[in-house]
Image 1 (cartoon, rainbow, N blue to C red):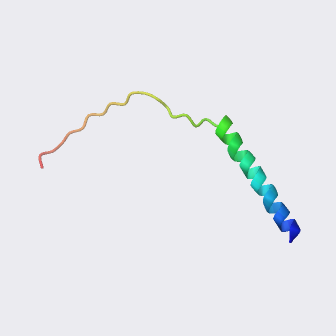
Image 2 (image 1 turned 90 degrees about the vertical axis):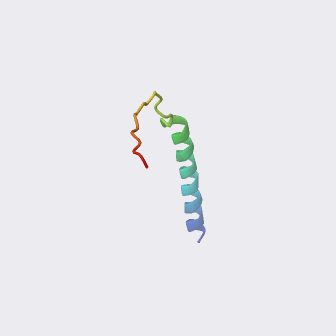
Image 3 (image 1 turned 60 degrees about the horizontal axis):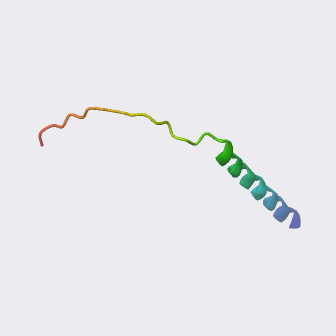
Amino acid sequence: MFRVVKGLIYLAILGGIGVVGYAYLGDLSPETGIITKSVDLDDL
């Protein structure tokens, strides 16, 4: 039973490190730019 708990704690720590690493190193910034699109409205 202790081995299962130890394994789950180990996986939780690795998962936390992975999430923190992705947040700092991953490209999470959105692309910026002006987008224009014409809209045709029909009579209702």
